[in-house]
Amino acid sequence: MNKAFFLTALLLALPAAGAESPRVIDFEEALRIALEQNGTLRQAENAAAISELGVSDARNVFVPDLRFSTSTSQSYGRNFSQTEGRIIDQSTRSASFGLNSGVTLFDGFRNTSNLASARLNEEASKFSLGRTRETVVFTVASNFLALIQQREQLGVQRDNLATAVALEEQIKTYVDAGARTVADLYQQQATVANSRLSLVQQERAAELAQVDLIQTLQLNPQGMYEFQSPAPESISISGKSMPTGTVTGTNLQTAPQFDLNALLTSALAQRADIAAERARVEASEFSIRAAKAGRWPSLSLSAGYNSGYSSSSPLSFDDQLDLRRGGSVGLSVSVPIFDRRNVRNATRRAELQALNSRIALENAEQAVSLQVRRAHLDYLAARQQFAAAEAQQRAAELALKYSQERYEAGASTLVELTQARTTHTQAVSSLVTARYNLLFQRTLIDYYIGNLDLDVLE
Image (cartoon, rainbow, N blue to C red; front, top):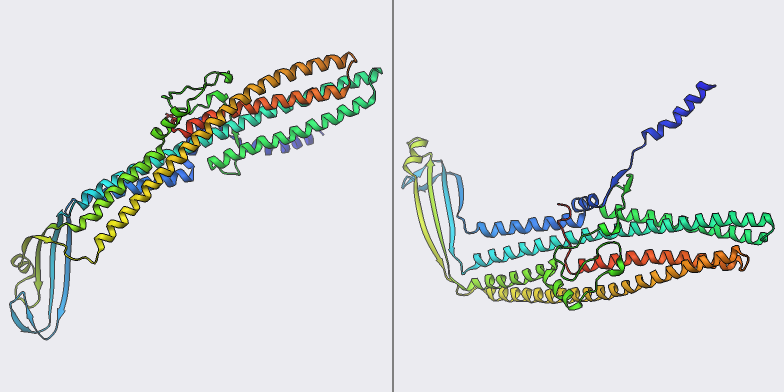
């Protein structure tokens, strides 16, 4: 019997022993994972790499090229052989070999303009990449704040259920002693059941917050993960040179007031996407200059070194290559006279693209200003909401204490106590929501003015 019991226990323990332990992920590791795996960020990195290649292409135009060329031919019947300098009447095979090089010396500043435009586009791509990194960091921080908030709300519901169960036991004691009617016990049992339902719903909300993090980090949905919740104030991604103040400590009621004009000025000066649009505007100006270069004459230098072979010659292959080798150097000038209005159309096209770039910059500045203005208003409302939630929680706690004392003394009904307890639970939950909303709005201001610290992982 003991042996059978031991084998059964061993078989039950095997799946648990072989179960995969969850991967523990803290805030900093989550940031690293997101910066490595986020698909949008990887696309932005590829775009920046492509812009670097564009700069390389524009720079290489200034370097002479070098080409090796060879050709063969078969001639039949009477033909004039340039290598022999006479007419021959036989089938011949010939081959030529050569090295050639060329470089443009002047093309109306097209090359220099294209290089300047490529460098500015590369700069714009890097700014866009930086903004994408900021967005990824902000999203991870927001998801962690949401997860911590849901876990704290879960703690509120657990405390509420424990208190409701304790009150049920107390009421049962009163009913057994004849001090309360059984109706109070039934009513409290219904309250306990409702508290259990609220706890289940909050557990689901906490799990969904984890799912959002898994999606943001692009982790394997089949994996097991344990996200470590840091202190809310430790989720700091603000820049080091914030002129308008920061939230410090745990007393969020002392969160700073921000000057809207200073925020707008900082946003337009610091936002990486605004800097990217400005770089694109400058790049479009150089594109106009490159398009106008077609009106200028162009000057190019070429050089070549060639040799050949013909089967009609009695000389050996090596001797022919040696005797027929020769080089050349040439300068060519091209002056445009009529180009079917290609330069005119290209210039107009470049001017329209530059106009679109300026419009895009204006739209971006307008959008950023509105974002900052809304974030400032939401932050002010969040501060007031937090202050009101604190006052509500203190009043609800006093009211609950007073109702509890009155009920124990037989001076009030269970309905009044239940209402006071419900109000207190709602007040505590509202305080948690207000607290994290204030933290989120503070982080949102940093994000909208471009003040996130991307060195948090270093």
